Image (tube, rainbow, N blue to C red):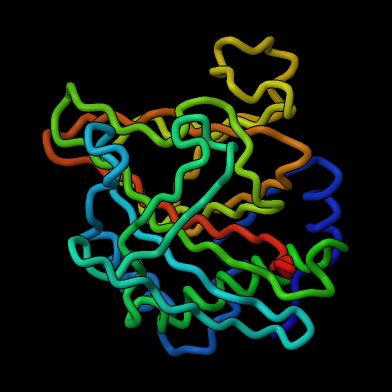
Length: 263
């Protein structure tokens, strides 16, 4: 499979963010039925465990880690840690970049091996990796890949589901890609892009001329990416839509950080 054309990456580095359509990913899959692979990927969100660090936030998630070798364009998942209470988990650390969990090593339920084996998931990650690895900082060394399965779900008209942190922020990883997997019977989930100096604020606290973009991911595999040093970003809370049944927004997040030797 070829890598994405340079002009797309140029927009990512020039503007600090860019968007992608579903065809960017489905066209990479050498399979008779890419839609079936997307359904299986969507099914992986069905039984996501509640986020242990936000049980009142109506947020559910899993997390996995992998290693990307840019000169070989290969991906290898790292094994989870066995937690006596929670089962297989993966440790996630953002330093001080998430003010709700500054300096905290969080442990999330691991991504199961059968989900890791999904060819569409692999091609999504490889697409993202090829984009990120065209930058100088990720071109010549091993790359750490973080893979987050995140669901915001609301059962009643009074419920609200909230991402963490619930403000404009930077993640700490140089590149993060967000891929909508499904969106059903919800309102909200509006993405906002702003300059780094807006981190820590809500969009309504930011002057309108500073807001670089506002958009909503609507269809499966609608996607966007941010170059973390250049922007802050936010997604608004989700509430139930017009129908009297559960509403859900499921997103795959993939981030990339250099593996730095610890000497």
